[in-house]
Length: 385
Image 1 (tube, rainbow, N blue to C red):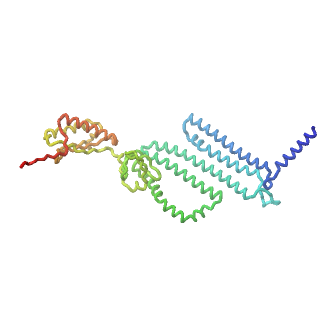
Image 2: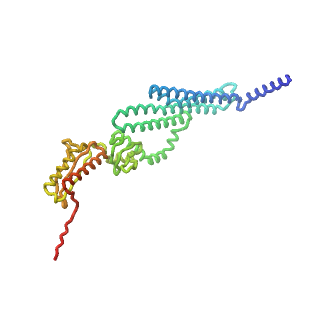
Image 3: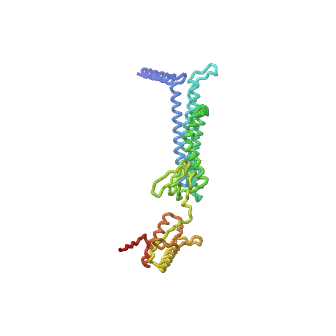
């Protein structure tokens, strides 16, 4: 029984030795590929563990000290570190395999050198992606400090500029990384491709001329600052507050509630009336009373309007822009009293509230003084034969 068991054990050992040394690809046994897989899995696991540890540490530090440059930096690098360790795993796992080498004597038989070169290029490309990903995420750090800086300024247009800068930086990093990996690492002939696509590039440029014009229009808006976010503006036939300024268009919320996107190139070439920048809102109106009122009531009507406006705190009383009330015209059907005043602050809806208070008080006082408002009338005389 013991001899039989020993024989089986020896047979199993021989089978195992033959199995692990079985050459499946030119001089490489199964165990080498198993180690390749193991190295890659270990690299991925280490990357995941580091990602978890760094994220937890950054969160604890943020809970204690608030958002700092270090916590932002660590949070931005957690995912790129995981990708970088995967690249390292790919590169070092290659060392476990045997590749052919014709430069030595005797030549070494193994996996094709072309595969070795491609393997190295892929590992380098993944490492480059990790570096670009890190730069892509680090834009968040720059955005954080830009937002802190713009929050100290009075203009809100700077706040809208930060997302534009963030998108520009990220697009630039992505494009440069893609070109560098494609040509510098993978050996793609990017220059040849771009040169051969000259005619197509011209066609694309012609098709995208409006997009380019809108882009430069947005730069002009940020530089010239004809308005800020939340300013009440009139651009062409559109009237309302500005909600957002983007690369392609500016969004205006009309007073009817509609969101209108106006191309930036059109804004640059149009007259922009920034209603929100006016210091006052002026009201001009004609108050008409009947001819039956006579001299006494006409003078009293002027005095009543002056008294009403003097009691409204939002009506400007500055000497350069005082309320103007004059009995100025004999109309066909009425005596005309010219009324003009300025409301401050220049709040659009406050302006309407003040007008309502003035109108109601005017009606009340005229009724008590028995002064009648005029309206178009005709008197018809019929001559009897």
